[in-house]
Length: 263
Image (cartoon, rainbow, N blue to C red; front, side, top):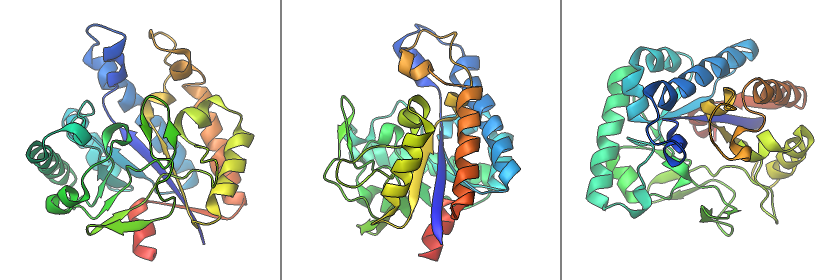
């Protein structure tokens, strides 16, 4: 089996705060809502399960929508709010926010929430995640992203720390090339295919991540070119091609929870 984990960070489109003084809720939440619907249609086409890491704030805006997603796919916690920086926040406050966020998602979905991904791939104290009652974390992107983080020397493979199973986002060996999000959208599909094949060796799985707001055209917003380029239909068609290719190459698409249960 060649596990391929498609994951989506369902969140407020808070990047608008950096470029727009007072973005409307229709933009903060509506863009991700629309993008998520398009993703669900694509996953349904191929009858595959994925993992959606959802912020509590987004879930409170669309509770029935999140509950509907949970009937087919896995829901994980993406923090209480996407503008939270848990890596620099007081630990007692982190615990409070994550407990409340998990409680909200569990009330909406009527299912136990076991997975976590921090906003912006921020690192989180694993002991806190354990106290919250979470089982796994997928916040580690083991590469160097200038201006964001430097996790270049962190493990590429799954490991356990303080009782939490850690599932890193996939990058290539040696030079640690990233293959999802901006890189998938802005670079040729061949780049992602080569990186996926290279990344699989030594780990035995692929873990990619995307944002639903990428699947809606962002051309009308004042954002950097690399945020807007190839958004909407272009990235949707590209992901369609990637899934089709992955199935032909023998990859098995599954949720992160299913992957960990089979290990």
